[in-house]
Amino acid sequence: MGRRTLARTTDSRTDPGRNDVLRPGWFIKIGAMAVLDAALLFCLYSAVMKESWPIAGAVLAALAVLNYTYFTNRSRALKYLVPGILLLLAYNVFGIAYNGYIAFTNYGDGHYTDKDGAIAAALAQHERRAEGSESLPAAVLLNDDGLGLAVIIDGEVQVGTAEQPLEVTSDATTEGGTVTAVPDWQVLTFAELLSRQSEVTELRVPYSDDAADGSLRTPDGRTAYLYLSTMTFDPETDTLTDTETGVTYTDNGRGNFVSEDGDRLQTGWVTTIGWDNFTKPFTDDRFAPVVLQVFVWSVVFAVTSVLLSFLFGLIVAVVMNHTGLKGKKYYRSVMIIPYAFPGFMSALLWAGMLNTKYGFINEVFLGGADIPWLTDPWLAKIAIIAVNLWLGFPYMFLITTGALQAIPHEVTEAARIDGASGPQTWYRIVLPLLLIAVTPLLIAGFAFNFNNFSLIYMLTRGGPAFAGSGLPIGQTDILISMVYQISGLSGTGAREYALASALSILIFLFVGAVALISFRRTRQLEEIH
Image (cartoon, rainbow, N blue to C red; front, side, top):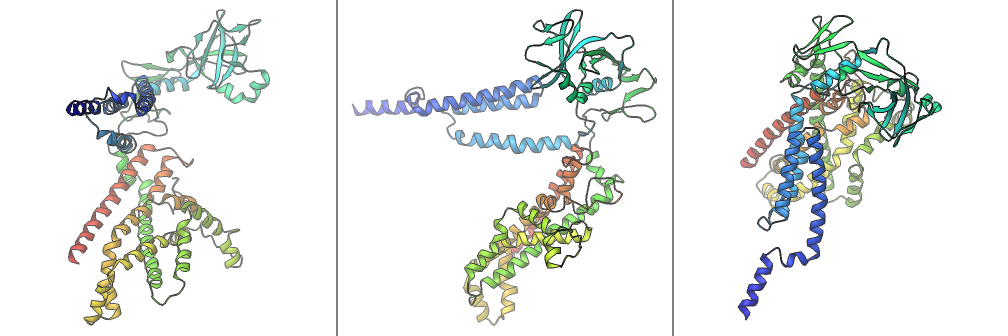
């Protein structure tokens, strides 16, 4: 009897189809997986519709792995690993891989679409009103997605948008040859047309899926006209020809149509250009001098910030560790205050205090002096290092305090017994042991300050600018903030995403090389001691 009971118990534990389905957790799992599967299926559908086959394959693989993991008992351990692995792949590996891909392309201003899109854009940008085109009754429409256009052609109401060509709709209402109502759309009144005049005149609705058929445009919101392109595309020769000027534009192999005279059409397409983005910062006459100065300043800023913070934090830690000092808890609490505040907020406060016109430093401490702390190149750099010292020394104070207290008292006592003086004990015993403990953190501090974007951006925005460079790069920009400026995300200059991606990879390689060399030297130091 006991053996049968044990067998039944064992079977119920190993068979997922028996007792598990009766537990509330099973229903929760089914619900959670249903929501997750629905979300992934939607992502899969979107990827397929946009023909993003690598993304579609990755989503399909994630679907298969998740469902296999959570609906079978053969991979119980994977239930804890799969979510983290998938998130790692989605947020880190994919981001790194995509950034690497973009670095080898010309993705940026003028190069956002594929070649077919660039051809369609060229045709649209060279449109002129067709000679003899009839005036079509029109109405401008509005919904949550934006403006649309309704026209009456051969007695039928056709509706289209900037993205959707004209389509016949049978549910529209007309009165006296005018469109008065369209389902799911609001017909704009005359007053509303006036308030959106610029949008209305810029509205371009494709006549059909073929870009060569032209588009409809309305100057007043009441009548529309057919516009045809003066540019024609020949798929056999892969050229665009302007019928007005007779100029022919050919594919230059770098994502643009270019004429024999070197004139380039405004819209290009994304294509690979090899290592050009990696060599441009060092070979381009505009970029090379500026990039070199930014690189030198980045290294000086990172090294100086780490060394000054470490030395100042170490001095404070040594003083605080003195046995005769009273009120240590109070002093240590005060020292931690700069580290307790968010760094970006402290940088903003310092930016206000260092303001030339009304800053607290000039007005109160310097009696109303007019010192350009943040607009003069050298003073701005000094101010950045000083503010970073104020922000960084509490961290160094904490780690050096812990490292000093971790050194056994017997070691220093033995050195004194052997006849070593106080300075000799410090430089030959305490300091080497301290460096072994804090060197990895100093390396991390160098990497952090080398990429300390928030301090630069909040304090100086990278300024002042390099005179005559024509680039959106300032003299206090470090490499990472320079990448931000080049990407165009700051709102100044062209958006050169591909060049920014290449520079970010170069920054990673440099910081990684410095960290690798430093860790090897640290390991050698540990072996010596």
